[in-house]
Image (tube, rainbow, N blue to C red; front, side):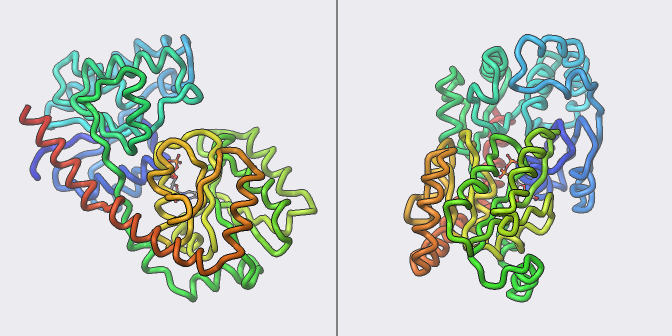
Length: 385
Ligand code: UDP
């Protein structure tokens, strides 16, 4: 496809949305540029793979606004207008703007006022009241309905929420993210043994949680469940705070320092070798206490051929089918998580069947080729409309 795409993302850190952006931009690298509103490791990753990246620094008054902020968001209006005018100018060289984050979406939507090409919003959040203040939900839905050509949404659960809030159904395209399986397939038994040796756990059952540290990502749920599981069960916790959640990190560190369980919890901080670490686990555990749109970690666990246990909300049931590819439990329910984990660990045959079925599911539903093909056809549709 030769359509020129301008990808916009407001942060330069590496979260799930940014890993998805890397895969898309690499697929379209002959005809795209990525514009970030702040610098970070994302730029290096993209450039290393031949993607052109530019940084247009946004003022802190804009970057500091959260989707959960209320009327204080209004303070960012002058900066928003200025940036959206700049985007409109830059976008003259492109056929379409793809917005990969909330702030990028708002800025690009407004840039339509100054003649930008069609704008796509890749909605990677569930617009619940926990994450979006009432005013920001209203503003986002109005901007989408007025200025956005198509809203690409990462799960049916997130799409239902967008429509329930008043988003036009005709704008919606559910497109599951594509996650390349190669890094998981390439993991060797020697790498797995090395991880287990480093952790000093031999063949002990290992439960793994792989997310940035944040209260609603809920790593504490797994730590609490550990008290109810046999002494030989260990937990591997991978990830660090990405958005300055220092209070949570403090509480989390205190919780895992309890001498009753300290020897069973292995917190490694942020790592870049998730495929190897996941492969060393027996079960991948998703612990979010709030609905998630479609957490990559669930799919990655399946690609690593592990059964996944996930909090049953948002788009997670579109990844995990209860008893077929893993287990689902009520978000935040420590007792239910511990019981389900206990059941899973007691039936290794069922575990391995779930793992195989999960891998097949991830390979078909979360195929990168399908995801890119779907995005291409949406782009063609909006550019020729
Ligand atoms: N991840 C990582 N290193 C870590 C923890 C997580 O590379 O230490 C990756 C993880 O493998 C996944 C992404 O970060 O690809 C998180 O994406 P997800 O959609 O699960 O959550 P998000 O952070 O986007 O809410």
